[in-house]
Image (cartoon, rainbow, N blue to C red):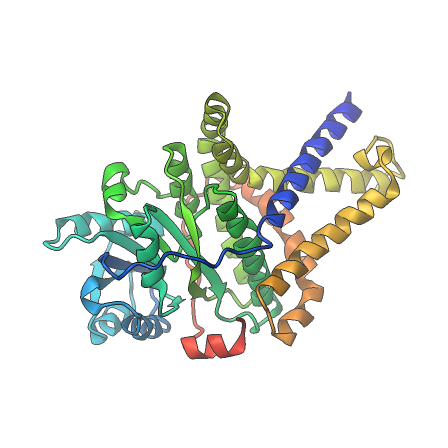
Length: 413
């Protein structure tokens, strides 16, 4: 009976793996012909900030230089429980500093929910709301790209999240590789297949009427995934804009990275519990592949956990207990299948870097440590499973002051 359970679980993981690999292949090409619309949509640009005095000034300078009519956008920085000079720096740049103090409801989701309520009370109402983090830098054409998609009928849009400091350490390089892979072979593939994309926490754009219609309501540790699930459940499918690029600061050290990823995984478990079965049921009832795909995406956290547990179980059996005492899927398959699986995983990340025209020799050198980053998700997810009810928000400190010109000259395309 244990053999049957183990084999069944491995078959499920293999099917999911083949599905994800097959999906990624549809991101190998990119359609370049896009409809361009004259700037017409107005934007409220929200920036969530908690003690970001070291980096918020660079973003304020960056947002002043957007290639979009100045009268069509305003910037509002949510100074959330700040104890530093974030608000005064924002005001010195002529932007709106909106001070929020609520130590009991901490975190980006609560801050956004509060700010939207303030926004709806203002005399001026905007066509859409764009959200950035304080450590971001946006491409000058970011709002033009959002305007194009809104004019084409999109209601929720995710921009291309890139890394502004991939060469700082092996950890930041690993983040960069992961994001290039996700943008090209997860997001773009879903765009090409006309499926729903997922939100990434920053560089997001929302039609105002949609936000007023369904409310924000995303206050978990992963508010982006939570709002994605709410949209897809209602038949509103987020789209991905490959050309709307923004650059995000990544943690420099493994410790800071692990703390950030632990928070993400804790939040993912919460969202998966809440939305997986409702989305799965709707996908079956409506015969809707888009909702099935998003249900599987939400369940990824359990797939990672299950992969870790099965791998650990088999390793202990074979290495410490002098097994094998139990059957494994590969025992029924030719040896070459396992080698093909390994090569396919290596190929897919290298292909993403090639397609995204990554030129940094330093990042390619850091590839040798990238497997450590990938494997480290296993214990982080395992620990997150047992601490998923911990809703305490933890702040990731940002210190890298980089200008957009530096990012563009160092990296890519």
